[in-house]
Length: 173
Picture (cartoon, helix red, strand yellow):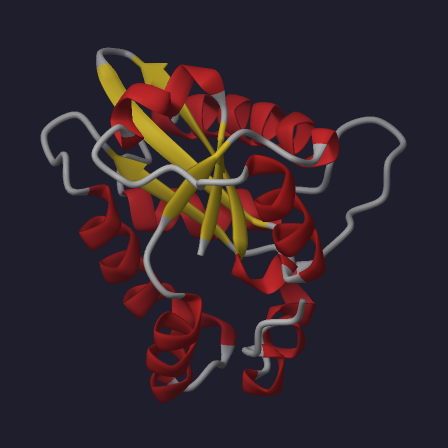
């Protein structure tokens, strides 16, 4: 699985392997957005969060990285909690995880996703200010937020079940 990590989050992902061939990895990630995520880090009142945005759906994961450095474990644990909330069978998550493989870190490949991460980061800050501190609750709310400005949402929460159909869990070259 590819994680397109923005510069300000790179230090949190230093223990995970980087892609070997960036140009080739970018092509493969674009051909397989189901296995590609964009990630960034943000600071909210002395709390450090990681925001991961799925490239092929509206799925969003928010992790509190302040005290728990094992991001991959937190990521999969949160997906286990989120998956059924969108009407997806938990067995499909196991299939997705097996097909996706281990994290491979690379530079961001889609400027629209980078812009979306910035918008969602502002919303995480807003939710924290409102007293919503559960990363799972934040992720579920952030996924529902429409993009700012005139741009239409590329993906919507209502289509997550379709976007993450197990038939799409195959790598293409």
